[in-house]
Length: 448
Image (tube, one colour):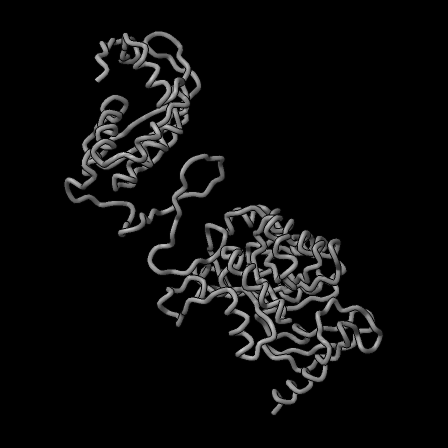
């Protein structure tokens, strides 16, 4: 095409191509980059036909790869180039394997010491014809596909900076989303979070319809929960606007994995948050949640500073986050933030991928309550377990029984505008006018 005189010369460690005409070299430099570590796939190829992309891939694998019986490898020291080749292969209809190899920094080669760089390996089965974008023969694949998506198993999760096109990971089939973490080992409501969409009676709903539907059912507020509300932040935010205009309260039940900017955006429309602090060590969060603890603690602090009513839930899992010292450090951290913040220590029961763990022993639940009191927490509740006064609100000053609860029922509430009716102590309780009379009527209905 360019009437170029291209020559191949064999050197000690490589074959090199020499081109006399500088215009071709400059073109390739502009399209692909000059340095071996920053080479890239020419942008035009991402918008080219299957035939052109296939020709490029064949040339690349022929020149910089190797063919084996069951698979073909292309090896490069440029991560950008490797990722570009992966994208082209995806566009051709095959999911490549991607490996990173870190060799020793130096080694002896042909009698001399040479430097070695990190290598990026792109591998595809030899049963796939990447030139024409089709399978030559049957092959046991490690992924599944449909008309729209590839479903790829995730072997590990890590963080790193990347610039380029992003492919969404969708949950296979029609399953619901679970959380904004990538891994969920245990969910006490797994029958909801891991359910198939076909198991529910669902309908599309616009943001403004949420409050209208809630009011039609006699609800005074909206709680966004099950699944994690932060993964549909925009919808929840848009739905809370009309709800607040109608005088309704709004609540988030969340794992607290939210950044500061969206949390501040929510603050004018969000009244309360029940935030899961799933443990109080980075070890636990890294092992079980596959995410760091600190962003959750930061979200709790910021929400409290913004004036959002917060309550914290700590699910006590035997052998994982039930150490007395860990619970003490958590309780002390909450007390330093605000001793009035309600803490719900919740009993674990075996579910989903943690069926090997026993239920939380009753003495452990009682220990957590005592440790919390010693740390200065004023309002401690025990969930998923029936223990005397485990769910009641008792005034921390005069010890009067202010609210009595049983299961999901509220037997009585004697608080007056969030304060103790006996001594006037602030109970950090959100309460509307007329709430006492309404609660007494509900108590009578429950007793009947």
